Length: 147
Image 1: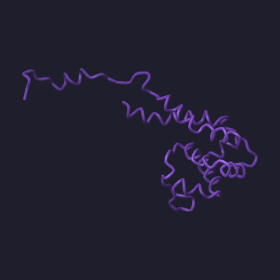
Image 2: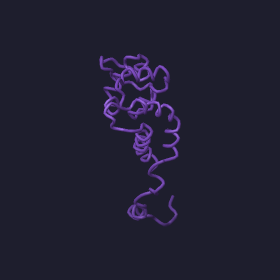
Image 3: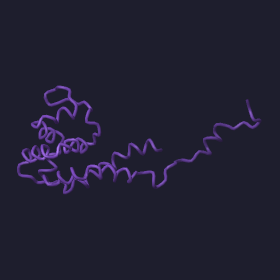
Image 4: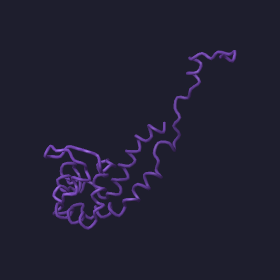
């Protein structure tokens, strides 16, 4: 059924805006701040290990005292789901949650992901700042969905 006036497709396309992005749509800083605040205690605990002379022993002790640190280690490689599967060094399939239950795997995880290197070589000075930057980067994917 027609209203009497036909609109050409080219006229429709020419009336579209080139973007719908406003300056406040690029990063959801409220979400970034909330996510960082939710794990602030664990991030501060990890800061104490930066430059550690014996990172392997220190991280195992920290994870025994504060088990939530293991989840944060996974977050630091931009993974939010502990039940996500991956291939272990032994070529088995495991989830992050299961793999990190074994204390000997924690340091191995850190070595293989590169987290150990940035800690030992003091390539960062604050996990809060590192995490904040990582969250902003992850939010770029969310931005695609907002657009």
